Every structure is written in structure tokens, then in C-alpha cells.
Amino acid sequence: MNSRKYKIAVVPGDGIGIEVVPAGLKVLQALAEAEGFELETQEFDWGSERYKREGALMPEDGAEQMKQFDAILFGSVGAPDVPDHLTLWGLRLAICQPLDQYANVRPTRVLPGIKSPLHELNGDNPKVLDWAIVRENTEGEYAGQGGRSHPGLPIEIATEVSIFTRAGVERVMRFAFKLAQSRPRKLLTVVTKSNAQRHGMVLWDEVAERVSHEFPDVTWDKMLVDAMTVRMTMQPDTLDTIVATNLHADILSDLAAALAGSIGIAPTANLNPEREFPSMFEPIHGSAFAITGKGIANPVGTFWTVQMMLEHLGEKTAADRLMKAIEQVTADPSLHTPDLGGNATTEKVTESLLSFL
Image (cartoon, rainbow, N blue to C red; front, side, top):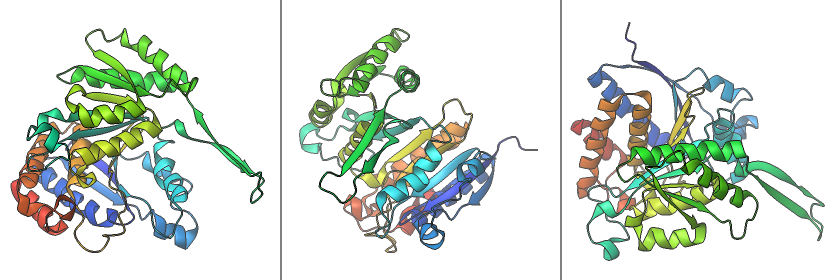
């Protein structure tokens, strides 16, 4: 029996998710055949269409169903005719939080052939932007605590409560320090807003200071989130590993993707580092209904997402092979989709990448 057999849950979701996820599965299957591991995939039709049919984006026991899998490949969620807070809380967060996927990791670098908006500042040196952004993924500003009262009245009140636990901050901070330690520069930047948010953010600062003593070989510094946007654009070479709260890293990682050339090529991993539950991997581009059905969605973000999943599963040879193929694709301008200024289709990019494997 092949011990290298993996059960993968597949949730294409909404919009271009249903176009790029099948492309990712083609690549995953090709690598399985080439590298000698086995795949068992099961697709779930969870998303906005299910919500419109049945009143829920996924079943009540959806997260429980996911526990039998080794990993989850997720596409996107969101539809123009369904409120965003319903889709986010009804599907993506409904998987991340029960499965304790507390470390969201988004690698960011300028791939061959991609021109960064920072080109005028930094020339053609892609090494000036090579980051790993760690986002606390289960509490903080997205803890889901709060409420509304006096609806429709002039005195209507809405509260959105951020919750930061010492345990939650410590574990993501320790994860970030370990990640920084594993990277060549051993450099970490901790991002908060502790000058204005004087309780939760000060706790972040205190925990960072304490955890740092466990990693004497890691150089670290602190930045306020607003100043961080300036540093990312003006001094990208001074950054390497970055850790921030749920909201702050959500925003900063999208900025990072744009600075690397396109949000269409950016991946993310929602990790349960202790592997008590499966981790979930997804491109960050969203459902992009403006281009849904046109066949021009960039599948590179999904391919890179699959590469991260393979690394997590321990299939490093396959992951490295895929990353080289991705770089061959992006290096060829004729394989650039419209988000990169080209006219290639999803199918053309996918078939070309398969030929490079």
C-alpha cells in the first residue's frame, strides 16, 4: 500500500473559484502521477448558490466533515447578490475557526517576468521584495463579538469587539518567530497599532518582547501599521517575515500582493500548525465576478496555493517542481493573463504549466 496517499477536500466556492480550482486539480493530479503519490479528492458544492437554494453556504456539520481530510483546497467565496458578511462568516470563517487554523501565511515575492509597481524605485531586482506575512487567523478584530441595538433609530448602536487572548497572541507570535528563524535573513517585523489601541495592541507588544527571548538568533523590530504601509512601499528590502493581527495583516497582505504585481498570483495557507486538524489553502484573489465566465482568470495564484499545500503534506520534491514550472509560466509574457497586462486564457496558462512539469 502506498503510504503517500492524501485525502483532499475541494471547495471551489464562488465566481472564478469554480474556474481556477479545477485547473489546480489538474496540476495536482499530474504531479501525483509523476512523483508517485496518490490522491483522493472530494468536491463540496458549498457557496453562495447553495445559500440561495438552502439558506446556508454549508451544512451545520461542515467543519466536522472536513476533519477526515489531510488538507482543504478552497477557491473563493462571495457573490454580488449575497451580503459579504454572510458569505465570509458562512463559509471561510466557518471552516477556519472550528478547525483552529490560527496561522495564515502569505508568501510574497516578485516572480520572474512580473513587473512590480515598485519598479521605478527598485529597478529590476526582485529580491528587494521577498516576504512571508503571518496573520493571526482566529481572533482579534474578526472574533465575531459584538451586536446592534435600537435598529433604524437615530440612536442605533453597533459594536464590534476585538478579542486578543494571551494564548492566541503567544502561539501566533511563536509561529512567526519560528518562521523567521527558518528563513535566511532571520528577520521579523511585528506590526501593531499600540499607540492608539492601548489594550490589545499593547498586549501584542508585550508578548512579542517575551517570546523574542526564545529566539536570540532572530532580529526583530516593531512598526505601527500605518507606518508599515510606507515602509512596504519605500523600503521593501528592509522587510522579510511580518506578523500582524487579523485585520492588519488582511490589509497589508493584499497591499503586498499588489506590490508584487497582481493579486491574481498570490496564495495563502490557513494553517493548524499542530496538525490536529486539516489546514486550508486558497488563492487570495476573491470571487472576481467581473471576469467570471470569461475564461481569463489567472490560475497562478491557485498553482502557488497547490505548491504550498504540497509542502505542507511533505511532498517537497513535487512542490519544488511546481514552483519552477510556475516561474517558467510567469517569465513568458505570452502566458500573462489580463491582470498582468496580457491576453492569455486560464486554459492556455494551465496547459503551458502542465507541459513544464
